[in-house]
Length: 236
Image (cartoon, rainbow, N blue to C red; front, side, top):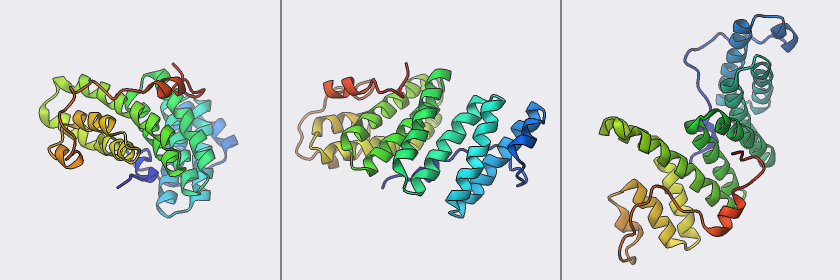
């Protein structure tokens, strides 16, 4: 079952009272006060999103984005962009949704936020899959899986329980990619992805496939995918 973009909306560590002030008024405040107002707008948008008030959501998160950029607060900027992508997806405006998910992807790569980078990639692969563009969806799924694999390598110093906890939060991305590869009859690539999970039910996916390739440190990009990876919004 596919994840909806709504489940990746950024969360705050506290709940702030709902009150909207104008951007002009916010600009006259101190930086801490402006951040508080941007956080409040982000929280307001979450509440509106839960009520399916998507057009109001866009206004709240766009206002938050402008304040975060002015402060500046790059984490807040990334969260606002990510959430705006989810809002436009809910409005059925997929091209604009993709545009808003492209921007935080580049931002998160620049600041070294690998977890956020993986989340942005997951949002993009989901959107391309919804638009019936399986090749692009697979490309972004693979990049997302490879980011998650890099994080998993860093987590090896943690307890097995903590490592398993992280995997449970990203496992669906692996399964979505495997399912999509299987739909394209790319059996060995799908097997490689599931090998990364070391799932017990692997045999259920490949009853007719003999052998098992060595588990890689990620999933391989095919030559056409390597050419496509240099997209304008994916910065190095």
